[in-house]
Image 1 (cartoon, rainbow, N blue to C red):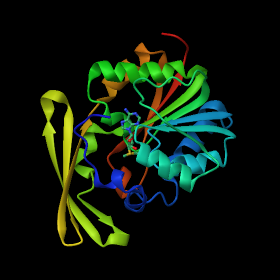
Image 2: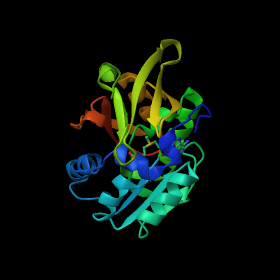
Image 3: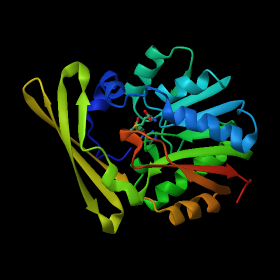
Length: 241
Ligand SMILES: C[S@@+](CC[C@H](N)C(=O)[O-])C[C@H]1O[C@@H](n2cnc3c(N)ncnc32)[C@H](O)[C@@H]1O
């Protein structure tokens, strides 16, 4: 992960889950529908990259027998393992991950790919997707929709802590980065966190995917405040580019 990420919620995965309430499992349901549409069935195996606490993987693991979740942060993986003990969670970096096996589906939800800022690193992540694919593998990525950035949430709440934060977004167009700064009011103190998201335009994303052997099949939206600015990209692996 880029070194300039500071996120209060990553230090407290239980708070992360309450802020990004997965009720309804919207991303998991979209993936289920897309797997059926593309494959005519559910995949037999699934790799979820940037799985965080594993909340989406939990939904999909009830449908798919062989699932693996990978995240860069040990705190998130420790929490995921404790909360979802039946699921295989590993620590790893999507730029270098090599599990020496393939999957029929790969997902990456919660804007995980936008944490990769550099073009060369995006190519490395695409190589990771391809290395873990066979022809026919379905890839579903949640990225930012450049046309909907004004729909990003302006206020965040940690219900259990009665804590709130207003978010301020700042564009860095030269680098296609969007910086989000939040100041949390927590136990009478102020805690600041910030993250920068890479904004990928659809043509650019299609180009990266094509260069690495994936065909872009379509983009989809998921209703909900936290996903209003998201674009769910569905692609399929053709084979080595
Ligand atoms: C906003 S969270 C989304 C987590 C989960 N997919 C969800 O939707 O709840 C983004 C996740 O991407 C992970 N991430 C960022 N950079 C990564 C990298 N280089 N390799 C693997 N995971 C990474 C972070 O650790 C974080 O858990």
